[in-house]
Amino acid sequence: MHGYIKTINGKDVTIEARYFDSRSGESLFTASMQDSLNGDESWKKYWTEIPKVEDSEFIDIRMNSGIPDSGNSRSYFDDVGLIEWDSIRSVSNFPVPITYPNDYHYIQFFTEEGDEFLEIEVSNSIIGDLGPLISIPMVTNSTIISPGYFYFFQESKGPVGELEWSSNSLIFSKENSPMLFIESSGLYQISLKIKGPFGEENTNTISVVALQDGEQQYVHGDVNGDGIITVVDALLCANYTLGLVDFEPVEFLAADLDGNSLINVLDILLISDISN
Image 1: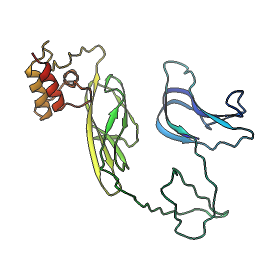
Image 2: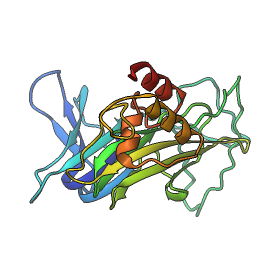
Image 3: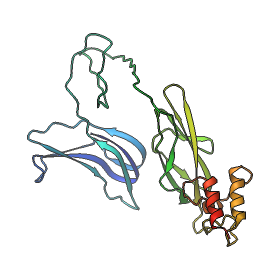
């Protein structure tokens, strides 16, 4: 049983497997992670061996969260499931070929009793075109009230290997779905660098905004906040894309008409269409 878990002020957060002999009725047995999670934990993968239970025909996977001692609690789960191992076979000749294509996700090796360690060298055979490597950073909510957390994920394409998330050029995570705590209001540039199997790299950047509590936002399209939308607002967007001006958080939010955390030609065109 395995899955990724992230908690904020968590209490007794765990993954459970409940066994049943039919689709309804009482549970025969419950297996869970050895240690439940409490407090704040960033994304991490957890797994545990669960037993075979006699007479069980069905397994129900449950993601369980308790009630915190105080405050609000949030628990996040991803890629939760079961791994069913195939039968074990003996290996005496090397290298060991593994038939492909296949639906294998994991491979485990066991050594004979008395062996201290097993050294493994793996060679992949690449079949077909891997496709271009494209970094696609994403954020669950691009605008927060500071201080607070941003939660990121990625939908990158191609043979994605290592990840590097950075905020204003400082690396803060190499995880798939990291979070970033922001103390002060401002406009933050978040970049995701991904690496491929042959030394390829690709980086893309999005912008996220942390506002002060109670800070008044501008109307969408009214970049300079003068109460009307004109070609001046479109010109400000154009200057921003060229790096000629910087935006305050409220200006960036007003300029990002399509809500994709980027200011580009599409935003300029959209503002031009609605300008007086």
